Image (tube, rainbow, N blue to C red; front, side, top):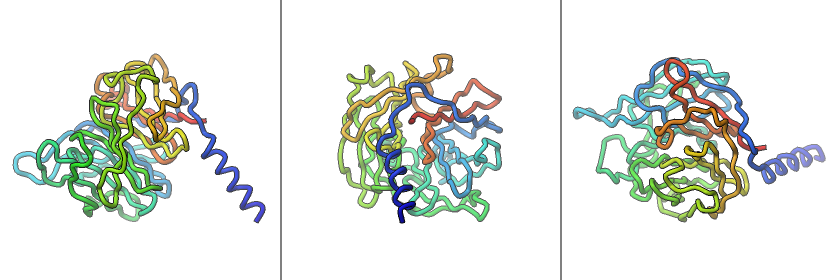
Length: 284
């Protein structure tokens, strides 16, 4: 019993007192082994499968077809390519739901702010016994205007069953209840305290980190930093990225992600034949 309490105390300590690193630590890289079908969007990790899932997006169904040609690519935990699949969605956000133990995707225009498209909403992606996509899926929910911006890349908080949807050209993050699809809260990020303006930072994406007091993190593209905020929008710290890192304008809009093993992902399109994802540790 004492051992169990001791382990719980250590876990609680690290969860409560984790804080941003001054300088991001590169954990590893995933060099893309094939050309992205569209634009690389976000990254998910499933611990039991020991696999990363990279979702492409940016291609809505065309020519009367109901399915997008955007693919999802599977890599091993050490960054080796395994397989690509086409489940048929214009992916914006992909994540592992730790409560339902399922891989899920949120599509472009989940709010239908840009009009209605087929296969729009939030979907569970079916996996086989090897952790690979079968290209079958189930609808979790259809479109919901509460997500706001058409291009938002929501992140998921399994503990509280809610989404964080950053709004474009804005400091506003909508908190959406996953059960009701209702807006629970609006977080106003203190960008002035962080020393940035909305055009310096990622336009559509903010990560949920699951770190108490440092729950939200986003990329400051122009100053090459990762900024952290609490759930009240208070600025809590900045983690420096290498000044030599070749970020581009497109890093404002895609090639981002935060996985449940505590890594912040950035897509660097100038490295390798098809670009490379850098995985950074940003907390002590």
